Length: 253
Image 1 (tube, rainbow, N blue to C red):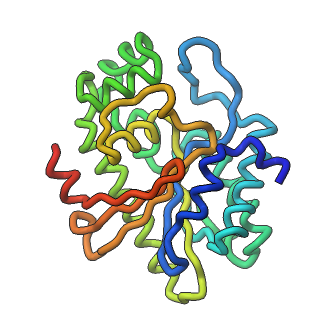
Image 2 (image 1 turned 180 degrees about the horizontal axis):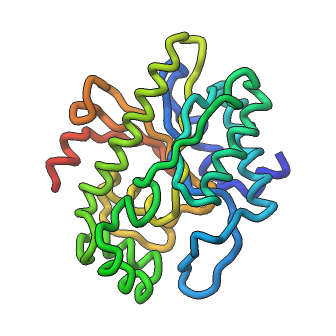
Image 3 (image 1 turned 90 degrees about the vertical axis):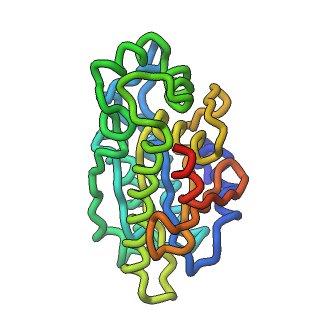
């Protein structure tokens, strides 16, 4: 438990708000603690996890599976090394609890979990604004739909949601034995997670207090999974549980 002192406190309370064990869930999370960067928070993709970050990811993976009794059955990640390492270490931690399952998991790299690829469509147009504004102000402008070179914020978040929806379905397919309690991991970056939370919450603004900490994430699951368009999104973020119809979100574009 000592290693978990660096875990954002919201994650402990989130575990208590998860649905019944028959419902597959996805943890959409920022990577673990990385090396620090100077300036406006323009973190290069070369920055790696610290020793503390590596220990935290493994301890969190073990704690999460132990507390929820859910097996990690699927994992997607940004192709950036610190995200891949976070996923690998969380799976290794979970492997201590479900050793017959997690060591067989393949981590699939997803372009929708990194930039450019998630929200940025023209990097030459977007990057100057990112450098000028810094990460928080840039994402605040993005969710207000005022930046060039970017998707419409709702369209961008719907693309990520559909990715998580299919990850959710993969769990259901692998979870035919109802005694198995399923969990998927999706490991990404602060900018993507911050915009995602703002849009699904309907706030369309991002301030520093809203910014996801390292190793902080949102638990996601879907009701009515006959199709993505017909589904209902459920999520737990910072101690609160929410619902949203995907059709309602699409209707706001």
